[in-house]
Image (cartoon, rainbow, N blue to C red; front, top):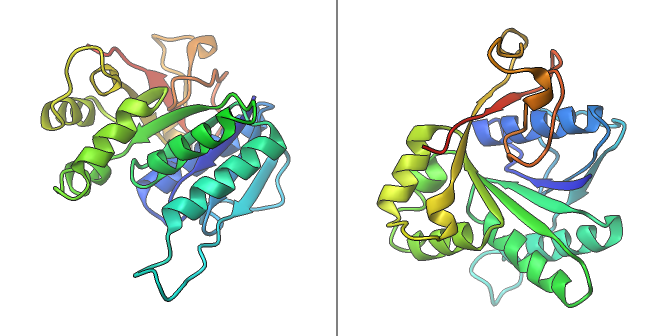
Length: 222
């Protein structure tokens, strides 16, 4: 597969999980494109089948701050069209899910069939997402994603409860995964065969974990 990954490039947990996941996917033969305003702190290049695309949000006197969300959407659409991406996997809902959805819509008119997978990590839901200024657009971003995962059952449950998810909305269909990084945590569970392991997106199939890759076992949505 050809996968675009967007995360905050800092040392936070969402960036760590996203970077290690991308490295693991590339090691297994997928083509991975990181799209962010800076190189992720845990990503060393050059690396086979891994590419980095910098997002530049130019300042303009009319804007209170550079419109990063729009610049990111534009870069996502450009990379998706040029590299023929199959999907965008975004970590941390705001603004990444919104940018990815805009990029998907931009590509629809050009024949680009792009899927958006959003992974929720914590404060994007429990703090930022619950702010009255951001709650409606965060919920919209979740509902408009093609698939949504959370890094724990607790976060999934909090999202469903606090965002008022109901019915057949995407918000009510969030799956959760057990994700971990580090060599001691990356051994296949004895209860699950390596062939059934899947990544944090619940979309990428991964074989036996390596000593430098994240393990994300699919968990029940119940």
